[in-house]
Length: 563
Image (tube, rainbow, N blue to C red; front, top):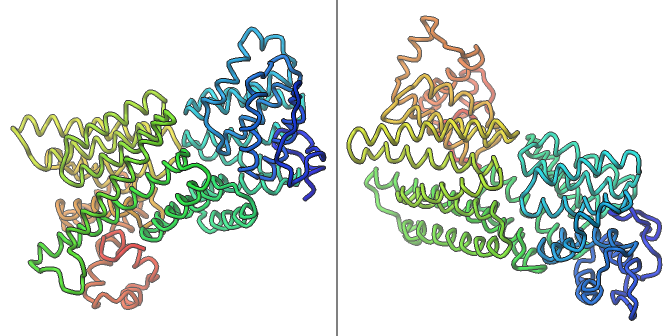
């Protein structure tokens, strides 16, 4: 690639004057924004992050004198916004520059200058989770760019717009814009920016169930970016890998990836927003590991057996240690989100804390954290955060029903609250394209239908069926386990004989034949497996089904380890 002739992300040709080794900007008493903007754009294109930060730090006198009437002011401001995006300070630094471009001044701007300012406005809105405002500004820019072709500006607009739609859970639209941005970057022979865009593309492909394609894109992006010091992007790659393997139930491996991402982020900025996100992801995995350990402890307790010497340390002490580590991760994440006034991130911290409280039986604290998370989501119109908060609230209310605390009237109140929360979670989830969020909401609704107050087994079955259609066969994480728990509760309470009798009498409800066949397999296969000495190959041969299907059914029934 020849930087001197390629396009930067702002659509400018890269200047040949600054050499790759010269990171000191020479400015005199009459600073010129053009050369400074060129140098920053060139350094950004190469993703020489520390060099760019040094240039910006040394350019503070120029920034302090920024004149909005300078012909290069809007171009310079857009380059600065991109530097904020890759890790230089945060949106509040950008605010100090944006305030010099009041509405009355903007009315007299040329169209291209006005569009650059709207791009900066869009990034600022994206940074403060005002996603709708960001999308509106980027829509305007992209419509105008049809008449004022600027490939670099279009690339950046599609890139930021794709990220905005992703935050809303609008994954199909997000993928369209991300792919468009990547194609434009490739056309401009900008392989570094192409690699950055592919990180976003990989996650969207993973959301569609294309795990191998997602991992392939991450490997390609890493191969390009490892020659840079773009710690944020490299950390994002490790974080994405952690989330991908987590979904297959490989929790220990996921924790390793999140550890790698934390180390990379810390090299650039220990208080970067993505640092907080990785800490939340790590805490989430620690909770899942703790839950697995607690299941073993409970199983041994029910069997009346004590830990063997081979087990090493006390399992209960280990459980407590993992839980405390999760809480410490969340505490640190909350501090970082507070520094950036990031409400959405704080909401995710609260949700994870809420589940930790619920695991310990502290229902009141869990419900409180869920309410606060919902409030933050409502402030930002974040449907994903709001839906997750309602799912946690439903779980807390169902826990109160299960404990049967107080009078019968209290149980009715808690049961109906759980119903209200789970139904609202479904409504919110339907407003996104997040299938796992929808699956979680269906499971919450099913758990509510199956609680001790309602015992509506037909509704619970329908919810289970809806959730099963949203959980991919190769997913083996907590969501699949929650679904298996719901199915097990339905079978134990309603009885297999009742189910078979209803089918024999033609009472199938609104189920398709395929759904009935699947439910029948979930009844028969686990029992044949037990009779065949737990040998999958024997079950597959006996029933003339694939071993893969046998494994999936057993996983869903909670009879085989996940991952």
